[in-house]
Length: 292
Image 1 (tube, rainbow, N blue to C red):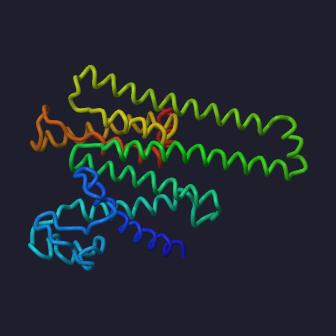
Image 2 (image 1 turned 90 degrees about the horizontal axis):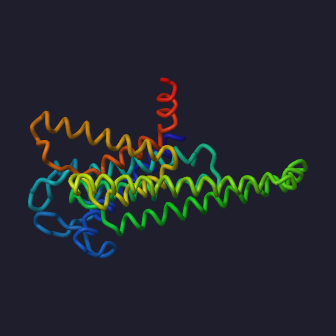
């Protein structure tokens, strides 16, 4: 039954992906997001319900507009598939179907919304080389608020668990819960310091390169990744972002699609690094330190 649940989660995610692709366009053009029908990018004709079925419409229409037969961008099915996969990943990572609880549900919401913010930023930077402040700042606020809320809920449940246990009451009197609160505050301070440090590092790179290859949007995205991934995985995420960007750039240069003077959007690679660090960060860090 688990595979069936994940299948329906994927399908639901593809519909979100269609909407997120629309958001990535309208946040740049300044059009309203929640009102107004979707239109063809070429002939501007409003799309019918049959043209809005995620992935399937693109396949049945052979990648072309059903009205003017113009070729449709791959961003449409790509964003829908990615959104579906990200929602499945959020359900799996949060343990939504393995151990359903209020905590797992909240974690699912936190991961899915955060990753969808990342998807919007991935699309806007890939298509327009822009990381809109509205999206980045909204994501920063959501992630920071969610981290505080989830931490408070964990501490609340832990307190109740100790208070309801005969031996746990003595641990409360001994200050165990107070220690956990202080530890949580210490982790939050480290998280903020590491996130600001990432942004400061990006600002330094902008200064020494005079803004070539990196902009203010990357500075804010670096802070968001710092919060989302947490220390030390946020450092790994940034390193992987640079690595992925360098490999991709070298491939384009080798294929003579770009020259060394050309600039490519850096945000998508930072986001990919963040996702890899989120899922495999501990394994990568353990592998690296075991080399020495």
